[in-house]
Length: 176
Image (cartoon, rainbow, N blue to C red):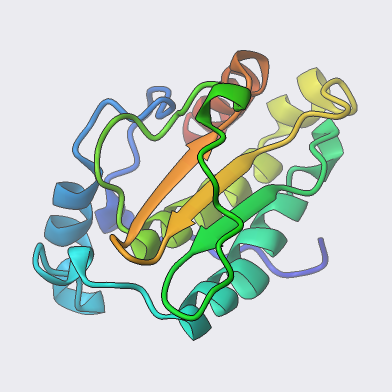
């Protein structure tokens, strides 16, 4: 992508270990580390997420972030949403999806969007990722489900893609 690399606020506390699947309390970390500056609180993380915000998040954050993974062969993401004034295309398709990597927990949509944006930038910036995985995962796809009613995000992907992204992320954090 032509966009300049945006480095994250170090207060996120990006660990030097694989982050997928989430085995940490996402909402608690978002409230603690980003809350004071971005207005996240434990209360508003469960408020319904408006339709226009879901559209903006998808078009301006999730799709461009996912495009950064194109070098490994990741295609367009399968993003489905439900919420007020949104035709429900969400339907319960859990059995057809690959494993959920966000864990069995509440993951606030806005915090997820910010996390996903930086995570994809890190993977793209990793020279290790370009050496090891360039063009090696054709046809892989990330599946994202956004529930505007409960302000919850879920992400699904194959184990193969999860392992490649984790490896690339850890290499970037360690400077490789």
